[in-house]
Length: 317
Ligand code: HEM
Ligand SMILES: *[C@@H]1O[C@H](CO)[C@@H](O)[C@H](O)[C@H]1NC(C)=O
Ligand SMILES: *[C@@H]1O[C@H](CO)[C@@H](O)[C@H](O)[C@H]1NC(C)=O
Ligand SMILES: CC(=O)N[C@H]1CO[C@H](CO)[C@@H](O)[C@@H]1O
Image 1 (cartoon, rainbow, N blue to C red):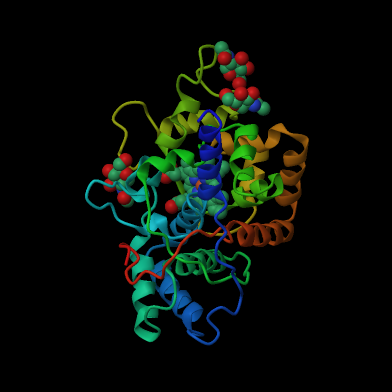
Image 2: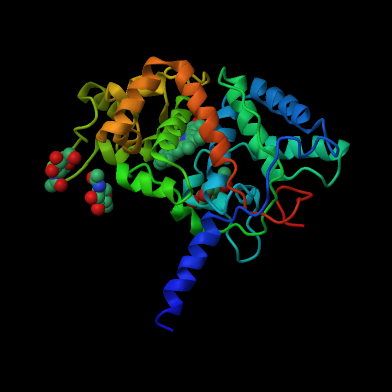
């Protein structure tokens, strides 16, 4: 028994992170649903025109999906009975694009029913989100299956904005992702918005010797305090991730170098020589960032884990 327990936990660990059960391919739907990607792109484009916040949330949804049980659309399942789903746990704060995936799924089902998984639709939508924001295009590997489990409790396994570089590295390594992938993928924070709650700990009572995190530029910290007062703060108060939050550029890396990144985790990229030199490289070359981002997205989105093709992305078959 003494041997069994560690073995069992090792097994559980690997089944959460490494269940690469389905072989993915770029022509997976060539015969069964060749129009799938065009249909998804059309829906994402329409919704992004109506609400400019859509691309950012789709990209973040795909990341949260892939980091828990692989990219198996577990993020899309609704809570049911006694089970609280991932999407109803605290880290879901800015995830609000579920209706976009529902719309894309309905449009795909109308042409090729029961063929294209919700996990693939979310992976296409994340790529489209980047392309529509002026970022790179990549060929999304296809053939993911949708999972049947989604647990709010597992969202504690997502990396946290308070993580330092060793904690970030460990979280990524557990999913087969390297430090290079970490630096490239965090460039996604060029899009979107961050709520005050995600960085309040850096601007008030940071620790017993510093009220403000000394890794933040003081003038920037002061402006953040103005946006995020301790009392009577609007529920949705926060700030764009960079001055061009709908453009997939390399501004985020420049902000990190200026000590103006909102998240402690993003700043942590400056704390090892290897990651710091990658931040410099991407801050000075948008092309290098775009190339690295595409490659790392393909790696992240190839973590699979599901079993079925859901009919409705919110419920198991
Ligand atoms: C170390 C890992 C990461 C941490 C700790 C982290 C943390 C966060 C936090 C705290 C927010 C702000 C949420 C809010 O206040 O509403 C955020 C936003 C965002 N994250 Fe990350 N993130 C990480 C990695 C990633 C990756 C790998 C991607 C995509 C490839 C990503 C894409 C985004 C996007 C696009 C937003 C903006 C969402 C929106 O405006 O709707 N993040 N992230
Ligand atoms: C990161 O944080 C962990 C946990 O607090 C700590 O053990 C580790 O030494 C820290 N690493 C660095 C590089 O600061
Ligand atoms: C507070 O944080 C700063 C910066 O990380 C650090 O230098 C200092 O030692 C910390 N103080 C305590 C009491 O942990
Ligand atoms: C969009 C969404 O599902 N939000 C939920 C996030 O989690 C909190 C609980 O922490 C719920 O109250 C929200 O409804």
